[in-house]
Length: 153
Length: 153
DNA sequence: GTCGATGCAAACTCTTTGCATCAGC
DNA sequence: GCTGATGCAAAGAGTTTGCATCGAC
Image 1 (cartoon, helix red, strand yellow):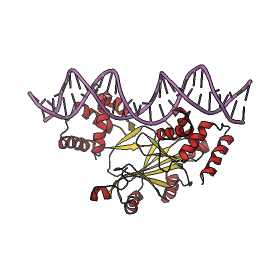
Image 2 (spheres, chains in turn purple, blue, yellow, green):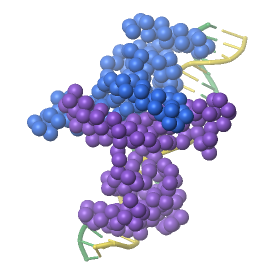
Image 3 (cartoon, each protein chain N blue to C red):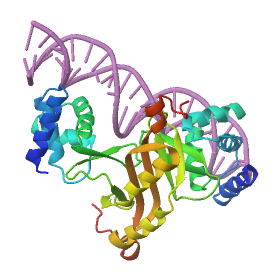
Image 4 (tube, chains in turn yellow, green, red, purple):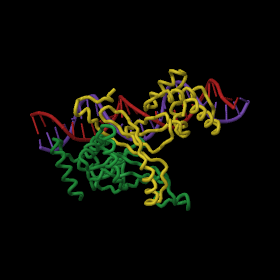
């Protein structure tokens, strides 16, 4: 999905929900889709302010859930009392996060069996899965062997 | 593992690490192993104070990581800016958490394929998995159909 | 007696909220 | 112009920390 298509989707979503298309929301959207890596709410605020310096922290926090709800941004909780976000290019929820504990880089890799697992849960517990999350915390082999982690920032 | 064996393990772990066996740490341990369900730090504080009312919140927060490190307690992050803990009976990390979004009950169910998945990660990314976490957020079928969720507290 | 452990309260981090003002529609 | 959206600052939740005192070894 191109950024233009995503912007359309965002505006349509807002319209459909009776929400207003404001300068700030657009700036936050642009800031989010300018990111290539995972970002935090605070980083998003910085980038959004670079576009429109009237954007406040409160509005970032109020807009993020809307973008998540519209499937434009994916929320990635890695268990650090801090949420990460990722502009949602494809629309594939069957992804695992692999976190390098040495450099804190977050990799996203396919985990297609999660869908099958969800079905198994339904059968066993009488619950219908809504979202699934697989997270792997890992150490870097290269760091252990050569003393450097190529992902270290 | 019986509670007695777990207590021994805790005391041995403390000794091995050069940490002291204090009244407060024992009270916190007992409180944790008196729980059958997942508990929060705050709930643990309440229960520990019922055993020894000199236990402070700070000591609970300082003791929890020790018990986690000793594999006596498992930390369960369900993405709510709030950590849950569970006395660790077996020693099986290949467990998924299924959370009922209607009643907030946390089910723990086996997910043996996670080990295989970890190996696959190693091969693909050059990382060695340390911990894995699979979480499924789900709705209750019974609630939708009959209006009641048998787990609702 | 030494030095780690403790309680207390304050600090900290991330996020949410009340309220007066502002601006889409 | 109505009503939702905003910025600000303060509050909130959960957790961590500095420091003087206490107590396990």
